[in-house]
Length: 105
Image (cartoon, rainbow, N blue to C red; front, side, top):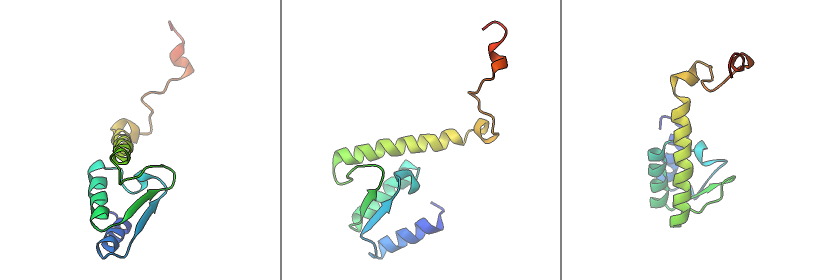
């Protein structure tokens, strides 16, 4: 969690200066399931509510936490897939060209 803005937010939460954290999407806060679980735990300990504008869930219920964990699992998967070397070269390993269709397809 080496993000200065996030660290300032967490410091403010610890100082009880924050009541609600509002994000556009859950993965804007963190794409790591482990990091996000720690952040939500910190929010819970300090009575901070968490709201995502584009994704509807309630973290105070077991179903809401399950939904959140599923969303975060996909976000973490996306982060890990994009970090594969094939994607870093700019070459799409799943791409094809019309030449690929010629010659025996």
